[in-house]
Amino acid sequence: MITKCLFPAAGYGTRFLPATKAMPKEMMPIVNKPLIQYGVEEAIEAGLTDIGVVSGRGKRAIEDHFDISYELEHQIAGTSKEILLDDIRDVINQCTFSYTRQVEMKGLGHAILTGEPLIGDNPFAVLLADDFCTNGTGVLKQMVSLFNEYQCSIVAIEEVPRDQTQNYGVIEGTEIQGGLFKISGMVEKPAPEDAPTNLAIIGRYILTPDIFDIIRNVAPGAGGEIQITDAINEQCKKRMVLGYKFKGRRFDCGSLVGFVEATNYVYGEMNK
Ligand code: G1P
Image (tube, rainbow, N blue to C red; front, side, top):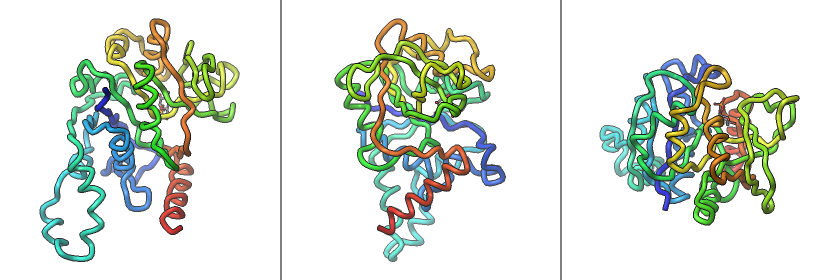
């Protein structure tokens, strides 16, 4: 049974400066909803309602977003605008939120390890909010049903053009059924000529809790950071880890072009 979802949200979002100077990048809206709220809604759809956020300095807007704003509620109570708060009220009512801070930015693996006190000895999902996924059943829901069957770590993967492998963790493995790979290894941000495949990891993971001890022992990797990819690479040598080609569409909202494409897509869907 998996109920927890961890949101690493301590990064600076420098690519979106000056927008992210005083505002967390996770609060950047796709049309009228912050990226992180889309992520939390995806977690809820998958039955994951214990939300853990690894935040950092300057991220208080995230906590305030997932809380009641009494002034605002009072101001719009009984008006036609009340409906605009329905979605976020639903989110707040269904979830518990807990927070911890990553004091130093030492990589995604380190961020996930920082979240250990919020997770404990339980399997958990990790969602990177700037990989915005949409169109049909949520990616986490697809992955949770696989987890229920296989009880092992699972990473979501997508085929990317060869010349983009240096932006991702890249897996290799054997396809055991359509779109499902038993992973034999993975490498963080390989140059195209070194990449074992073009199957890139995207920001959705389900991890078993033995990963924490592995992260503790993993050496700094790409960029001098503690990489979750390196830890899962160790894990797959000891036990089965799956790569799952998710169904749906992903926008890389960590890049300006992906962010604009996501915005246009969502706005188009809203006006259908
Ligand atoms: C992180 C991971 C990488 C993964 C990517 C997905 O990289 O380290 O393995 O492919 O997220 O978005 P980042 O985007 O933080 O550089």
